[in-house]
Image 1 (cartoon, rainbow, N blue to C red):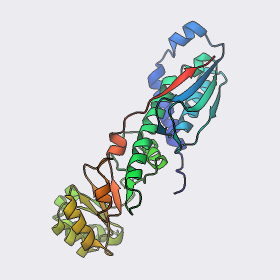
Image 2 (image 1 turned 90 degrees about the vertical axis):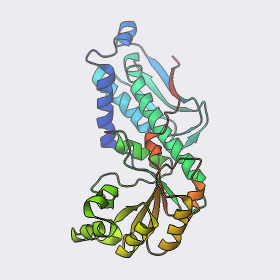
Image 3 (image 1 turned 180 degrees about the vertical axis):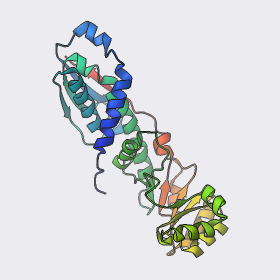
Image 4 (image 1 turned 30 degrees about the vertical axis):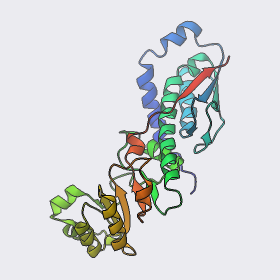
Length: 287
């Protein structure tokens, strides 16, 4: 799998919003009171626990923006690549500049880094669990509003796949669409009539009967939502060579292997983004 592309524009927007939020109209009054705009500080950003790195380019953007706002110079050196697995105590980056820059950007940089490394680390755990099967681990649209591009980047850094970043990416017929249309087959037919070929449509099903209807209508992907394991195995048997199958609903690392071994193509986990804890990272000033 090729390295994920860092979403630079989304990152810049997020950094500006986050610094506006954190600094307030008056800026970092504490650091200004004790250090003014002069002096020099060297900070090391350190992993306090084992983790998969994601979001280091954001760290650089935070301190670059702080330097721009203050009119002061700063130097950031990234010492790891996103996607790397590191041990506790690893120095991930250094930042050098006036305390007004280093301490002014500290919390925002760590918040982003902790959040994204948490997502990447949880994703990597899920990917390891299904290794050796054909099932891929993917994310969902259950992301933090305004941070989707960054959170999905972190999933990719952890070895997962991104699934439908926006509503215009593909037709995915879910329960409410089926209800409005009057059933699985009719929903697929309406999507086809709107110009979307059935082989490019994904439809969510809750029962084997709905699965059969989706297969008969020619859906290219079928999402097995909250179905028991035995039903998923039967769905894989019926769908073999006819459609690709995705499993979703209540999946989390630690209980993925049996679903992956059932013969499906993808496991989608909302918890990768909405359930990941922030990893423990810190900025230690050395001088």
